[in-house]
Each structure stands twice: as structure tokens, then as C-alpha cells.
Image 1 (cartoon, rainbow, N blue to C red):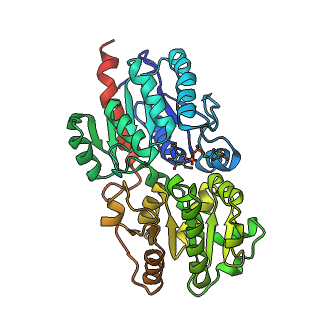
Image 2 (spheres, rainbow, N blue to C red):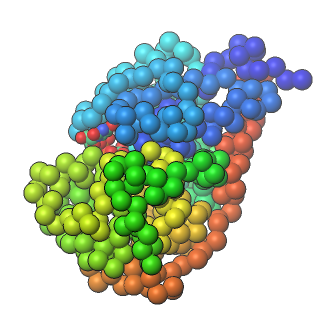
Image 3 (cartoon, protein in one colour):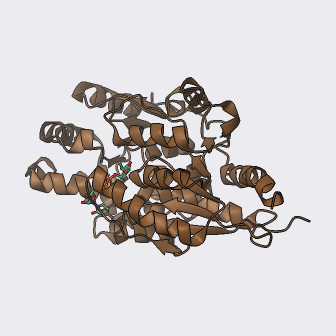
Amino acid sequence: MTEPLAVVGMGPIMCVVGARPNFMKMAPILRALANHVPPLPSLLVHTGQHYDQDMSGRLFTDLGLPIPDINLDVGSGSHAVQTAEVMRRFEPALDAHRPSCVVVVGDVNSTLACTLVAVKKGVPVAHVEAGLRSYDRQMPEEINRVVTDQIADRLYTTERSAEANLLAEGISAERVSFCGNVMIDSLLANRKSARSAADTLRLHDMDPAVIDHPRGYGVVTLHRPSNVDDPQTLSALLGVLGEVAKDLPLVFALHPRTRSNIEKLGLGHLIDPACLLLLPPQGYLEMLGLMSGATVVLTDSGGLQEETTALGVPCLTLRSNTERPITIEQGTNTLVGTDRQAILQGVAEILSGRGKRGRVPELWDGHAADRIASDLWRWLRPSVEDR
Ligand code: UD1
């Protein structure tokens, strides 16, 4: 019998979330830590990078996440301000709770900020979803990934290409463990509870008959600064989506950044509400239902590229690169960039039945978080026994 860490006098595993795409990654990890034998004590920190009900509160409920033990309430700001504010507020939390290690996920500003604080205080850090690279340093997330991976101690990868990226950056293979995809753990655990697309539309007083179309419907999300901050790119993209929507009704879940730019730039006239249905940011179960029933997903999100691959739904990624190449090589994803012709052609192929079917990648099997919990225990155990 092995005693729980808490009993042997070791601090909790401090799990950090900050922004929307972190929540579905951390939920299965927290569960796996609790179900591990012995149970591994955890503490949930929410930096507050995303803070409102649509971007945060609802997802906590949908995913069964516990109320955070610590909320840093940082809110929005420039990259420098947001990162600095997370660092400033995270340090006293670390001092107060003396964790055995910090677990960070993904590539948002909170991931980088908490990693920096912890490693400089000598607290070990494990990074989940390590090694993904778009090789595009214009993306703020790419900077967050590269720096986090360089300084974190333990690196959990979702696909084999990630380990190769890390080794090419001089990181030793001993620090890396291929555990699979925790985001897909959440997807598989919640698939049966997903809300149907028709119910989601009804909830927003929209007529579900719109998506009851012979070709089905498409789902759109856009939030990358490169797509939605530049007026010309955003108006061109809305124009193409309008063209697509004439053949295939589209449901567009609007990120607050995108909504605010559409309003600020006066681009609302490009949206025909009869076939391009605008929704607020969706809860996890709503988004899962919308994607599961879709003919195609058009997106610039990293998470949706993976989720559509797991669901077997064709995905057109409105970017010129991806840090998740397995979704292209094995999954249902195609990069179409922001070029009108490429987008229209991608949609036409899918509508004519020539869309990618794909297969589910290795270890995207619903048990990634269990493997991470076991590895964390193997990793931390020697320091417990040293005491
Ligand atoms: C962040 C992440 C990005 C991730 C995305 C998912 C970084 C660098 N970026 O980008 O990797 O894909 O989250 O959404 O960490 N806002 C709200 N409510 C909120 C939070 C934000 O209305 O709860 C608005 C604010 O106006 C804010 C804007 O959204 O200025 C952008 O939020 P921010 O966290 O800065 O970046 P995201 O674009 O969401």
C-alpha cells in the first residue's frame, strides 16, 4: 500500500487554468488525479484570463470542474500586462500552498506566466500538450509554447511530431512522455450529453428549420488576431462565409474579440441572418452537439481541428499553418488559409462527398489523463520517498 502524497507530507499538485481552451484539458486531469491509486491531491487555480459566464463559468458547469481553490481575477489586457499580472498574482499563491508541482496546459498567456513563476522558485512544472509548433512566431501562442517547453520539467505530448519538435530544440527525450490527448478525453466523456444543434438554436430563439437543409449545415468559429483584427482580412472572410452560406447554412459562434471587431468596423451588413446564424460563445455541450452534426467546420481554432478529427467531421482550417499536423495527415483537417477560392473549393469538395474521412490518431482514446496521472506519480514519488 502506498500512502497518498498528502499523508506523506507533500504538497498538492497545483493545476492551472486561465482561458477557455484550458478548461476541457484540465477537467479529465483533475479527475484522473483523484481516481489515481493512491489519490493525488490537487488544487485548482483559475487565473481569470477568461472571466465571463460565456467564456468561463458555463464551461466549468458543463465539464463538471470544481470551483477553483484560487482565483487570480486578472481579466483582459495587453499580452505584457496580462502575463505580468498573472505572474504577480500567482507568486503568493505558490508561496502559500507549497505544491509538489504545477501542471499547466496548452499555450495561452496564463500557461507561460505560471510556468515562469514556478520554475524560478524551484517548483517543478509539467506541461500538458507540449511540443506543438506552427513555426509561426507571429502567433502569440507559438511564443508561449516555445518558452514553456524550454523551461518546464516534464512534457506531455499529444502526437508523435511534438516529441520530434522538442528534440530538435535540444530538449532531452527523458523529459518527454507521449500520453495522448486530454481534450479528446473530455470529448469522449461528454459526447452522450451533447446538446443537439436544433435545441441550441431554439435556446437562442432561432428556427431550427434553417439547418434542416438537404446539405446539412456548417459551423464557424474565428478568433485569431491574424484573421479578425485586420479589417481587410475580416471583411474578406465574412464575404466568403456569406457566399458559402448561400449553399450551406452556417452557424457562427462568435468569440467576443470577433463580435467586437465586427461592430467596431461596421461589418454587420456582410452577414445575412437568414443563412449565417450568429450565436454567442457556446457552452461545451452545445459546441460538441453543433460540431457532431455538422457537414463541415470552418475554423481557426486549434482545439476544433482536433475535436473534428476525433468526431470524423471534415474541418477546413482558415490558417496557412497548423501546430497539429496529425489532424491533416490522419484526421479530417485541411488547411485552406484565407484565400476565397481555396475556401470555396474546400467546401465544394466536402459537399460533393469528397471530404476527408480520416481516422482517430494514436492514444486519442479517452485515457490520456490517466496516463498523465500515473506518470506524475512515478515522477514525484522519488521526492516523496526522499523525505
Ligand atoms: C486567448 C488565447 C488563445 C485562445 C483563446 C480562446 C492567449 C495569447 N490567447 O485568446 O490562445 O485560443 O484565448 O478564446 O492567451 N473577453 C471577454 N470575456 C472573457 C475574456 C475575454 O469578453 O471572458 C474579450 C475581451 O475583450 C478581450 C478579448 O476577448 O480583450 C480577448 O481575450 P484574450 O484573453 O486577450 O485573448 P483571446 O483572443 O481570447
